[in-house]
Image (tube, rainbow, N blue to C red; front, side):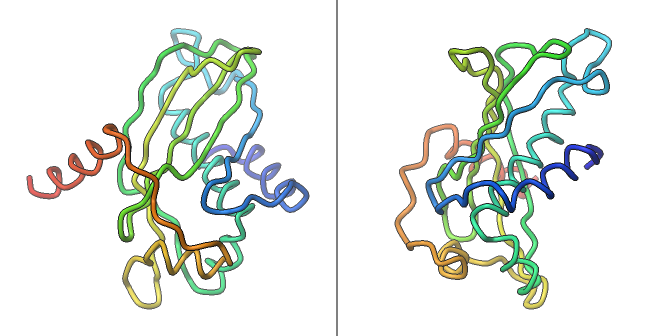
Length: 179
C-alpha cells in the first residue's frame, strides 16, 4: 500500500467513527482524486483503485471490531482474487465515495463488494468483487466465517445468496488453481 497519508488518516480517524455491525454493515469513505492518482489519460489510474480499495477493507475490518481480534489472534485478512469493472472515469480532484461490504461467504471465503460512487446521485463509477479470507498464522489455516463472526460478537447468520458475478468469481478462482 503506497497511500501513506490516507492510511495514517484512516488509522487515526477510525476509532472515532461509529462502529459497524457485522455482517451487513457498509463502510463509506470519502475521497478526492489527487494528482498522484492520475495517469497519462488524466483520470484515476486503474492500479490506484486496488490500493484505495485496501483502505475500504481496512476501515470495515477496524470498525467491525476485527482489527483487535486479528492482532491478538495473529489473524491476517487477505485477498486471494478479484474482478473489477470500470464504468465511469474519475477526473483530477473529483470527489468520490468508496463503499465496502460483505456480499456473502462460503466456508472460509468471504466475497466483498467495493463500489466507487460519484455525484449527488451516487452513480456507480467502478464495482469490484473480491475473494477474501482471514488467515490464522498460528495454526496455518483459514478461519471459518462463523469463527470470525463469533470472535467479534456478531450474529452467526447464513450468507446472502451469492450473485451470479460472485459465483463466477469463485469458479474462476478454482479454475485458475487447476491451470
